[in-house]
Length: 65
Image (cartoon, rainbow, N blue to C red):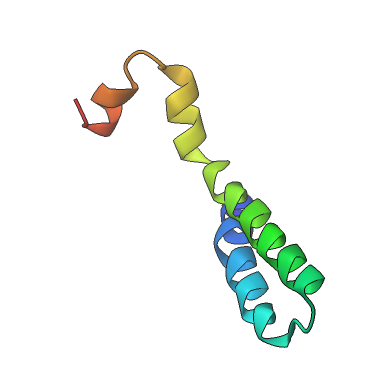
């Protein structure tokens, strides 16, 4: 789980830093897409499990009742 969240937090940052070296619109689109895709790894841990366990009680768990 820690590895997935590390990818989810570090991966988008590295992709966005690489935008400085993108010379074409295609490279820019690829890097932005990579940043977005890698950011979804951060949702692969405890956040997903809480939402899957209790769909009807999710607001109670998160305290947004």
